[in-house]
Amino acid sequence: MRCPFCSFEETQVVETRESDEGDVVRRRRKCQGCDKRFTTYERAEIALPSVVKKDGTRAEFDPAKIRASMSLALRKRPVSVEQIDAALERIQDKLLNSGAKEVPSTKLGELVMRELKRIDKVAYVRFASVYRSFEDVDEFRQLIRDI
Image (tube, rainbow, N blue to C red):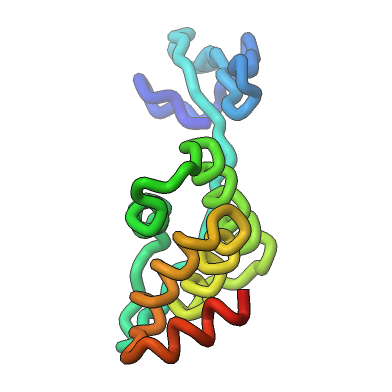
């Protein structure tokens, strides 16, 4: 690690501590050139795949967009914030475990629908009706029969 004060390339780790949650490591370092001390932090870098939209454009995966879509479908439904958080976590885990660098938006939509079906059938129907662009009542009937 290069010293931020004198740019000397050799530093010594004097002290190491983990955060209470265990997701960050704090290190106190001492420069071998100027003897000044400084702190560095280590975090795991999680690289979620980018989303390939229907028109071919790519966008960074944004959990806030997924949460907003799910919350809209779950509006006025008896579902807790914890259940939404858990569903979002499962979606992210599936994306991370897939190892893919890109995911089609259609696959992402299907993952959201699967989670909504699991936690609230009404929200599932709401989301599916918009996501699949239902044109008539028969499509609703078929979806409800499938549930």
